[in-house]
Length: 367
Image 1: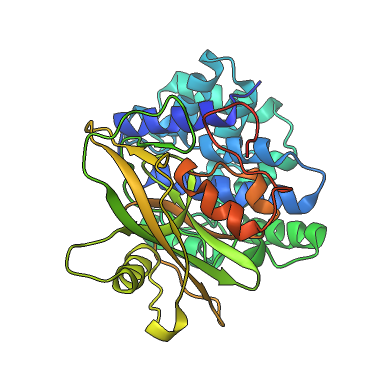
Image 2: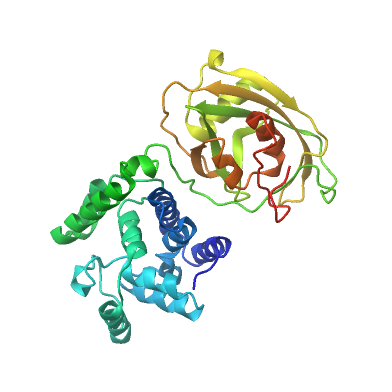
């Protein structure tokens, strides 16, 4: 058994509260890689891959431990009845199922060590175990790393990296590339995927929702930018809502709409746009577009939207407001949760009501 995707994300957030550190975002990067590779393979469950990637290091919830995080994660997941996640906690560090290949301190009790050893002797590794081992070896805390650079960093920190383990990981990379017929770094979006550093409290977004709160603050005027590259649209995975949104932010008192568009694009993505690269798209002033923040402030949002098409793939840099930046095809937009206030923007962008967008205010796709 496994938790749902949402339950797994909640387990990771709770674990980070107990033991904050870069391991949480490392887990998110591993989950991203696992999901993308599983999707490309065709015969693997992408949601399962994502969940297992997210929880492989969940034992770190219980403190700074080396080998101990393996036993902690295994015991924790088993206590919740999630045996498939428990298995990944056990296997992700052991390509050959041999204790001596572990890199780090043996900081377990005799009982914990025996539990790990007994588990390794009896477990049968499957394609998901191998997938998470692969993704663990290229997941950094801010994005996807070159595998050899990642393993070299581990070698520098711990003083050694077994050559057999090194070679095995590169063999896994070749094996999955052969299965997909694609370069693995292209599949996991090595050059564009990134993780934001901070996680904020949840904001709520409303569009044409009778249950929306009544605004208690002056109108919030903002600017968003539709950033396209090769028929894909750049979105941010917001840290304050766990949903995807168009790039943008609030208009300052001393700037024009265009100045705001250029500033927000640079702050949220690292992309420096020239003024002549950006053109006006549409003004959105539907009074039902409402944002409610955790501090109790509720705003009606008015948005000026711009549009730009990039000629080259940019190097992306997440702000603290984002968990991730990613380019999506129009078809992919139908499968991700969208911030409700940006649904009318993306509906116009898609130019058709045939493709439906997902929101969090109903169980089915809407609009």
